[in-house]
Image (cartoon, rainbow, N blue to C red; front, top):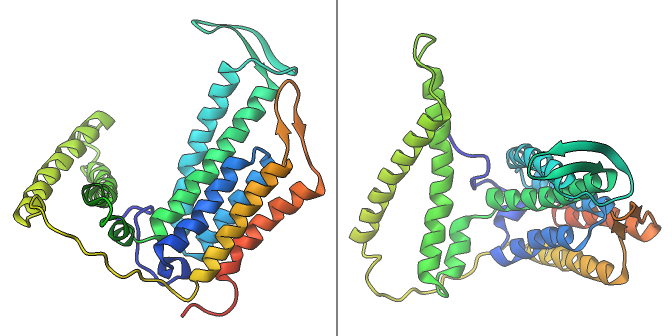
Length: 291
């Protein structure tokens, strides 16, 4: 069983693009989530990442990251509402929480937590699209001449984490097929078996690497970079999105402030930026069928 976040070879423009072009494109989308605080612009950035993922065939990766991100978002909103008592609009007053003391939940703290969660969600789905669409071997071949040991470590991590995810799914399926008379298998037992299997696999991998001479000194030649005829589109789209983000931030576009009272800019510049992000992200995928 293969994880939805694991790279799966499939035809697509983003899959065929060179690693630098894909990095500039997806990195600019994550950058836009960091430079803006306006929920309107963040929604536009999320739409841009969704466009890139759907156009690249990473629908399953988007669904998984959204499902995980929704739980994380709920935790962030709850924690921010409980910990931060700033804001003028009090929603809940008078509750006494051990250690924390008197609890005042304000509308501003809830909205600020929601904005933080929205930012993290956009970055999460951007990395999910990267994981599902960009070949990790090509990334590591690009890094290997500079940092050989780090590239090897990253290779093992990128390969073994999806394998561990698949092992967990198989263990759960096996536990469910044991029949109604069998004792239920708890999370602790599943985790213990997963760790035991991962340690056994790690020993086997280490022995294989030693037999293949990875511990011996030796040179590594850089392999020619592979790209596609759509590299220029991804590069230009990434550069434009990054420039739009940095320039908009410096110009004060997308203003938002949660404290002491909510303040949100809904001016033409903010709306134009939010609409432009998905349109620019769609540009590398527009026109003609993939060749």
